[in-house]
Amino acid sequence: MPKVAVIMGSKSDWEYMKEAVELLKQFGVEVEARVVSAHRTPEFMMEFAKTASEKGIEVIIAGAGGAAHLPGMTASLTHLPVIGVPIPSKNLNGLDSLLSIVQMPYGVPVATVAIGGAKNAALLALRILGLKYPDIAEKVKKFMEDVKNEVLNTKLD
Ligand SMILES: Nc1c(C(=O)O)ncn1[C@@H]1O[C@H](COP(=O)(O)O)[C@@H](O)[C@H]1O
Image (tube, rainbow, N blue to C red; front, side, top):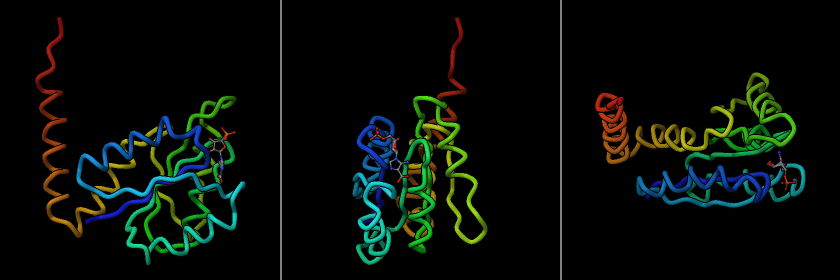
């Protein structure tokens, strides 16, 4: 069974990140969801990122707000693909989170989605998994078809 880690800097990010978890589970993916903070639990973050691959995790989705260092630091400690989710922050509406995650230096890529874009992070993870798991690729294609039909069938009064 494919496995994805969904990590976040604080429990306060869960209201956004749970959308990614729900979507991944709908596609039959095993999810390890937990709070990991580069700032508040640096040693644990290191251990988590370094051992993720050997635990069978294939993609990491990392959400963080404000000075959002978690996705980048995680990407620096593992060869696995890391998808960053900028969490809307109180004072700057997530612009701080977005810039902290997206402006990575050469050599340490983080695939960054929109502010609050946890569902797209899940969909991107599913596309990556689809390279290895044909059943996931088929489900992604079906999902795309459903999205397309929803738009085509939209009726306006
Ligand atoms: N950006 C980070 C990191 C990190 O990057 O390691 N750890 C926590 N945080 C963020 O701090 C914000 C406020 O956290 P609290 O609500 O716990 O005060 C959250 O959005 C979290 O992601």
